[in-house]
Image (cartoon, rainbow, N blue to C red; front, side, top):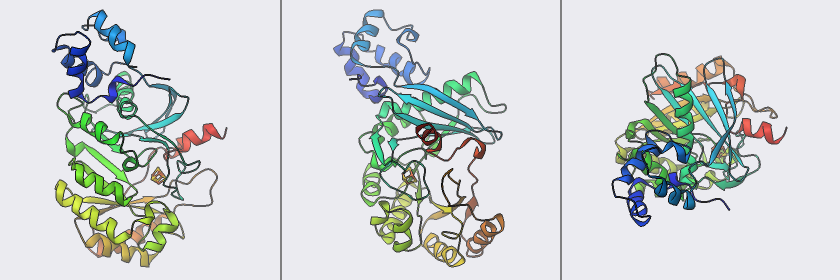
Length: 351
Ligand code: SF4
């Protein structure tokens, strides 16, 4: 069985560990620096950590849990990665180049139990949760990739992170709090809360846990329906939580974090692009501190579902705009490289 990953420990746990292994207390800070600042992936890279301490750490922990398997670059600059994990499973991460920074799209699970009808990751169900270290190490690899192949015009190390890859982040409560903690901690990745976004399909128990944790990061709620019936049809598992409760929890989280919650609306031709749905969505979004992202579907290889025509998308948007709802159309990048989450993994699984 693989050892635990050193990156799964939150920075505060490194001090006691170093002391237990006979190292000086200040080595914990150096160790955190190697993990979260210098993106180390091999014990030999930890140059100022004495060999006996390195060996003792290596006896208990693994430093690398992900091996790059595939890297694809889209014509729009989106970079998509497939990593193999130590047990042979695979996960995906994406670098989306924005105007002056990169956004990292991270996975939290291998597969997903939420069974959303429009999602490639849903096919095959949940395989397992990622460890906190496996979530954080995606950032390590993506930063190393940007260091080796920088995006012109981007600042050195600023990046945003969205939990929008494979898996339902709030369904991996064993790892998400630790991963968020390390991302935000001064002696971790020291990210601003404003640069982190948890994107969820909105299972009620998960939303309540997030409210209790109060991490202050942004929240995106994927609704999938403007009535309970619609939502259950497209998102059967998260759809078990009544829509009114999801909206209430999203609004409470927005008030707690001081940031509006984003409602993500996937536009699927004939299913979620109807005018009356736009009107109901406007009503829901207008009921609290929300804004709306409209996301035309990234069609799957083997599916009859398609995005609406551009004119239908604009007509849908117009209804929201006229109702005074702050909204944006988000085109998912990298269409030529299967950038919808789960598609790369699925292509490999199905040959
Ligand atoms: S859309 Fe997200 S929550 Fe739904 S099945 Fe896919 S990965 Fe899971």
